[in-house]
Image (cartoon, rainbow, N blue to C red; front, side, top):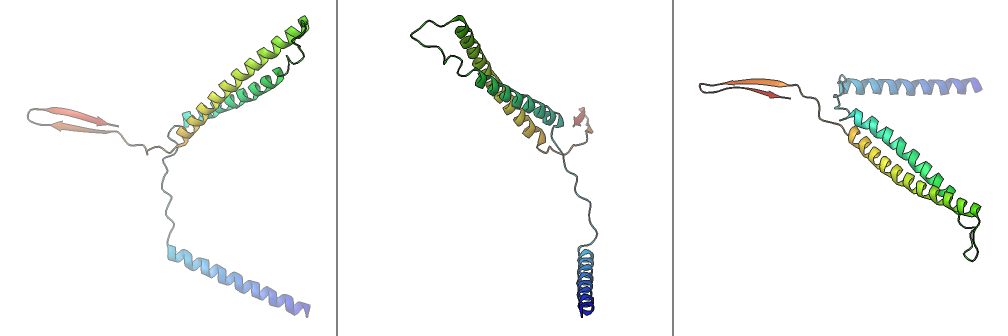
Length: 152
């Protein structure tokens, strides 16, 4: 009984496969031969695309470094009380923390500017450009004139 059932399942699968194969063959004949894809224009400027990626990486690095230094300098002046004279160590720690925070802000601003410039260059470089045209030269000769026109 099990052998008969297995044979029946196999015959049904073979029939389905044969039907699917003949249907795909018929549709391929109806479509006709495949035509090659149209050539695309490609990137308008691969150099700008690559330079944009480099600028974006520098920008992300600047954002990361700026965020680190801004966070590292935070809270350095919290230990100084306004009612007493701070020690030299507290003054030095507060000065260092302030310098780190200023450097962090500079890093964040510069990193953001580099990132924006890099992303803009990536987008501008990746936009498909016009297909390249061949240079043309034409001559114009008349009774009172002569000229050459070059277009590229």
